[in-house]
Image 1 (cartoon, rainbow, N blue to C red):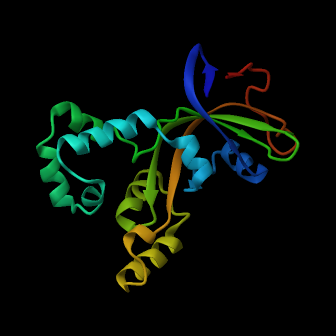
Image 2: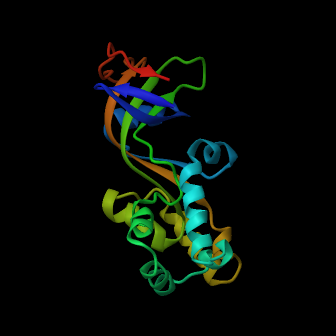
Length: 199
């Protein structure tokens, strides 16, 4: 779906959110929103064109998806070095298989009493493995899942889990507020009269 803001059509998704988290976003206390992988969010976030392009690159280089998923960092770099500049650029811009999102329409799942529209400047897809979480920790100071990371790393190290068993999630960095309505009882609404067209 699209949201029109400042004369631009932005790629937008719509997500239910608890009011307490909406208020944290408005106060600037929460800048990363996450959704653990499930069939609903996967259907919202799948990028069919990117998936097709990715599979074509694998096919052209005679690489199976299973073999690709098991590449070490060194093997990955060696494989990437054999690709065309255009294919390398595709991988550098990839969001971990996630569709590029520019805005989120948050809504109240109970009777639609409030709404919050935000700008997103970066999003991606990560697992709870430390090497994948370092980017969010270092760039955005995101530590909400630190205890989950410790558990996942311990279970993988002990052989209880394979890396494929570790939970994955979509993440969104909120870079600004477009507008909000219906939250004024607890916090000042932002641009409450701004007309935002969502299609």
